[in-house]
Image 1 (cartoon, helix red, strand yellow):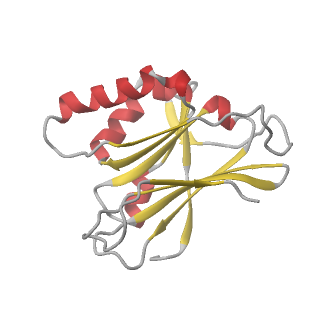
Image 2 (spheres, helix red, strand yellow; image 1 turned 90 degrees about the vertical axis):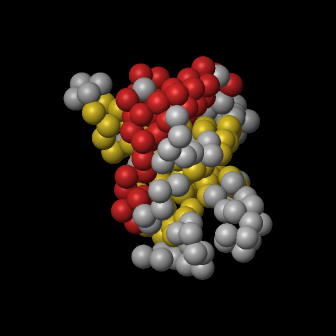
Length: 183
């Protein structure tokens, strides 16, 4: 699977079943992106480790979700499974966010420090949203690229890419989050 793009699951919380399920895209409009749609992005390398996770995880999530109106996309790096599972239990995550599936990513690329993308349900409602994942071929530390694409009118509008590199360990420039707007 190294180097190939794999479709992945974007999770949404279903209140009636009280569980996270694959998000089904049902856009409310089918027009190209215009100036009335504002994407506000927060990115954070949470620099995760196993020390004091019972204190760190609530602080990380409460900090992110307390400022929610300020942004509608969150790109996280160095997310460990414990933080991801804590995130899935958070009431604000369940109420307002779609989340890329870290468990699925770990099956494709078993790196304990991975990336997660959160998208507000309000923003996602206007687009067809898909997610994908790609493991880099030439890194010694099992690095990968987490991707979310917003489409409208049958055409890609915005593609978000979230990754984590460390100078020296991966022999490349440190870069956390990338996004592009197609022409």
